[in-house]
Image: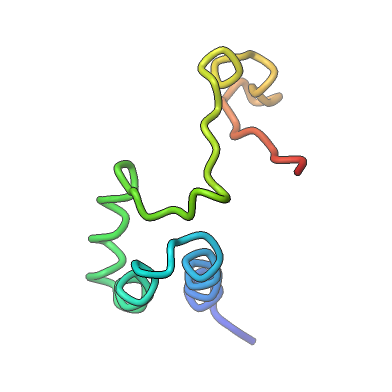
Length: 83
């Protein structure tokens, strides 16, 4: 049985392998592997430019601010991708 932080590490590594452009992948995999590197990566995440453009799509403000993305808790929830 794996521990929760090990599960998170597997998920983070899978996300990097799936959605980050090839020339940035190895460095990000090294960052995700260490606690210090992971913190550094999380600080950069809001301004991250290494996503593979095939998978990155902007959500128009008119949709992103729509009330239909507000769940029953009243808190804003991310939209679910149906593609």
